Amino acid sequence: MNETAVEFDRRMLEALICPRSQTTLKYDAEKQELISMTANLAYPIRNGIPVMLVDEARTLD
Image (cartoon, rainbow, N blue to C red; front, side, top):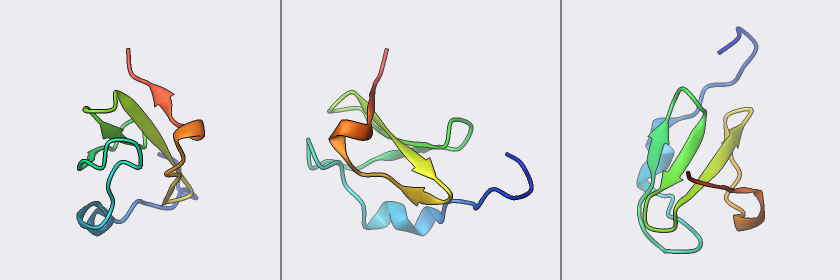
């Protein structure tokens, strides 16, 4: 992560759930994503802000 990147506040994980599956998420610090194993989706984190839109999520391999 570069010096200007805003870090994700892990406390947000307690409040966030997957909009598709309504299940908890896992934080992937390396890829800056929130992972929903149930929905098989990865939601991006941009400038420290999770983008919790299904249309913006990528499908996991």
